[in-house]
Image (cartoon, rainbow, N blue to C red; front, side):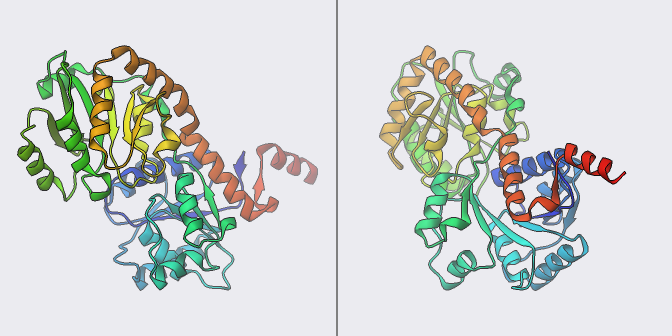
Length: 384
């Protein structure tokens, strides 16, 4: 199917490159393949603006300073008018606020809000207003857990939906050789690797992860590699030093070649205390890795406990350590769980995400704007 006579405006106000921005790019690439006209409004010189433009997607770079930036709000209205936009799809909280203020009661365009975090809705009057207002047509959570929270916090259930984030599974069909990275990091061939890919921010709960690494009991040589940057780096390095486990954990910062590391890892971890979904876990599953994680947010919707990995309660470093120890000692189990995950992750492809998103767009706009190639051809024949 391809869509005729519809224009989507995506808005993302992040200046950084994280999982959410990658999801926007994947969605936009999928919509481009489906021939859906679209524009991305992004921060100037942001990674998303650069990557989307390189993918052949129209990008408008405009500075979005705050949730009440009237210049940005005016720009959204201008883009809607000049490009005859039918749907504005926001992908960050900041973008949500701007589009909310841009929309007027008389406007016909629809406002769809992507919700990627499992944080509860703030009880302030403004937060409740911008989620419960009639100006909002749909809030799409990337996990069922998020959707449940939205309803619990007072959203109209008919205006909430779950569309799981998806990944490009093909990127992990053939993994790069691990030998180059082993040489760079001076890792012995017998050293097993625990990997974590996440920003160094509070809700990822790195202190619990570090504590669990300190508590691992095994005769197998291992190291934990942390890929990510963030404001907590110095605090976390101090924790590692206080525990005396500098030989067990390395902080590698942000890496452009992050996908290559999935071929190096033997076990993947995410120790979050809050997590909308956690697509780095999906990447690890596609790479055939067993998972050790917490039960935060939407993680249990991806990882099947005792089949694709082990799930612990949030903040339970002892349980995480026991699960690490068990998997480090069991190569056959690591392989079995990894194979299970490779089969399961097929349900989380970005193609599925795109298909469901198009169905959502269709539900708002009706048959007049949506034509399959076959029906358009038939219509043209009838005219002639």
